[in-house]
Length: 156
Image 1 (cartoon, rainbow, N blue to C red):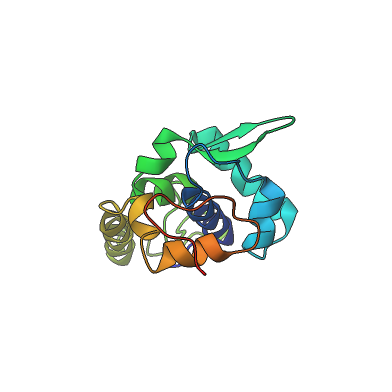
Image 2: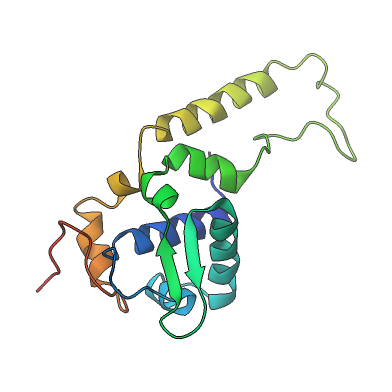
């Protein structure tokens, strides 16, 4: 299964924010975009969706920025991917040119089950799991990261 670029960006934003120590100065969307080497406008859309889901908190003004919420810190990666990807099926059998097999197709059901198995394999993973070493120290070392992950020493 292939995730959308939007989901990829959102997951990278969550991972980046997960290594900022609670109580440290927060990151901005621009800092996250630069650290993850993606266009600001794309990251801003991903961050807005994460905010809507309650995974990221954003504060405006001086001392403002982004922080992972309590929900974001304990979120299942499977839940997060489901929310970001939506309810779309792997294949589309309807539409302008509907598939003539749609009424008797066994493949569609098999693909739906495979998609759910993919998500289910991500359910036990939390955001903390995916930023554990060796990933966390690399994320901390990216340009613009302020503070380190609790328990992950800063490089150097």
